[in-house]
Length: 284
Image (cartoon, rainbow, N blue to C red; front, side, top):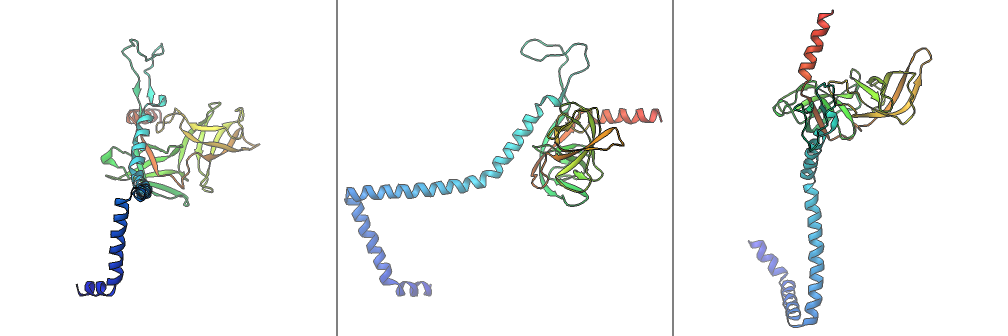
């Protein structure tokens, strides 16, 4: 308290000057229409600029909420993609429209769940991502993971609220893919060199391939819907001793900047896996 009094005493003349200045200006602006108009214009410009800056700051802090809403909305839209649905095998194709249809309807095979990436490695030979979604949110091992641009990997370990994803940039990771134009299928894997490139092997030389061609997931995959982006052809390696091409692909997903992903649940995965395993055992 003593310091306050000392401050007032030391700067009393200046404080008294400010009080008189404010008082005189208020009288000037209040009783002089011309000066009042000028003051109001300046005040409006100043408050308008201040409000604009405040709104900009508020908008910045609202970005996370907005981004989360967009991710959730994108997940909802992805649910509606044609590749996520299958029709039962019937002799006639079902067309669902506003008219009466057969009692058989399309079955949603793939369901999308948005998740935030909270951990990611790209410089190792065995790269993984950690996502903030686990068993309590419905995640299970062997679920595919994609980014808005393309495939990311597969869930390999699950906690209650977090899950580990084996990245496409993992030496042991493999996924079936196809050329979008011709439909020829092969296996995508990473050679452990550049995090920007993977290879597509076992493409027959009878296929018409050129640089820039698109490679997507195959509908025969049990982890991903068909036609999810994998990458684009950057180089065609022609081994003269083989009947197959090896294609160098630039990944559709930028693993250095991926922040949000979608976990894909195959609603028929357990049935399909059980049938395939029992069939293998039956003929071993």
